[in-house]
Length: 132
Image 1 (cartoon, one colour):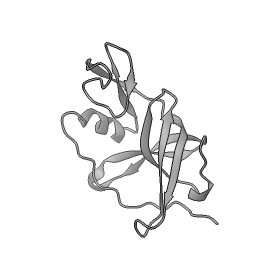
Image 2: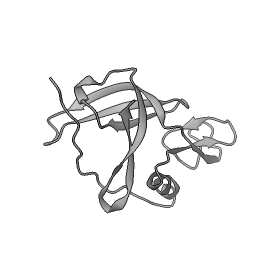
Image 3: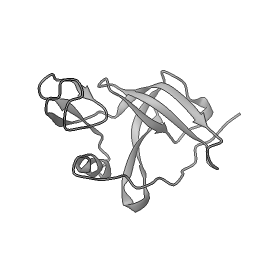
């Protein structure tokens, strides 16, 4: 059985002062997170204060390559099936995302993926991942 990926409408991201850099980078098809200046730990999701030590953080560009940690194909939440997954980036952080541009039934834990960007309402781009 095959479940091909189909694009579905994506809501516009909520942009505020703390997320503006991230969403502007996404428009340029770049993925960023933040690293703590004090303890050096990278974390997802990006936030101004480190969740580990409360230190200040700075933006760092991610490679966009990673591995599926876990994945689930959702078929009954709406008219268009989609895959939701945790992807562990090569840099070490794990993010909740969608897997796109593939046969959803062929996805496997441990599969290599790369970031891609899908259009949202209002012209923004949302980072998602596709198998290599």
